[in-house]
Length: 155
Ligand code: ZN
Image (tube, rainbow, N blue to C red; front, side, top):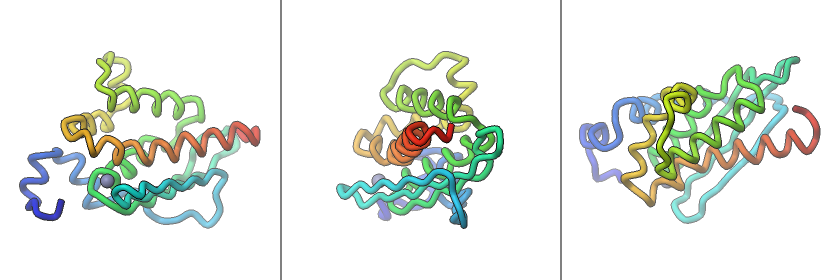
């Protein structure tokens, strides 16, 4: 979508999304990780590698979220990483469930919106149905990583 100027981009997706796209958070890879997951969407070339280190209490203390592809996956991966910090596996499963509901167009309760916080800005992506997959790809990586941690009884 490089045919759009930055100004048009801001208008389409909103300032919070574009800020994360231009200044992605948590991009540095972690030297060692308790959780790692990788997802690739051959349809649009989007790619994400997610890593996390847990503290003794099982909380997600350090996150690395490296993405390549369109503006939406990069913004979603960055916003997700920021939202993951300090959370438990249980809280992240709830966050991922709420985010999927948001993308599916489900009405959000005030409680749900309070949990999603900045991530609620990504609901604008629903207006561009082909981009919903882009927004969800980092979350698929998170869900797979969480499943793997559960299977190995790390959380
Ligand atoms: Zn994409």
